[in-house]
Length: 84
Image 1 (cartoon, rainbow, N blue to C red):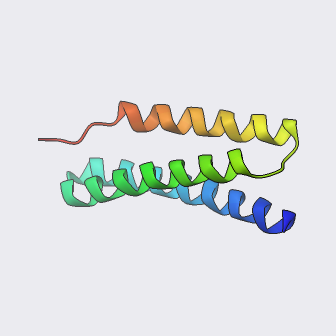
Image 2 (cartoon, rainbow, N blue to C red):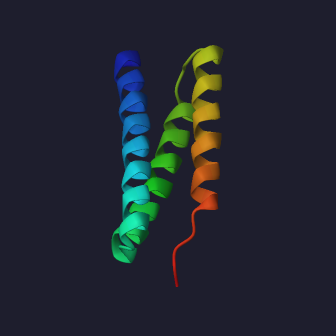
């Protein structure tokens, strides 16, 4: 079970980084629909990672690392804006 949780966390972190890369590309291409979809997916993935991290029995060092990751990428989400 513990290995599954660690793998799920790693997969989510990887997905979040990929979504952010997609957002950068969509911004360059002015692809609003893809941007909006990716922003929703990013928000959802960050929430899911937070739920898993808060509800799983992980050590303090790893928990701190995950919380720092969440904070950083949540700030990225907050800074992004969807064109009108």
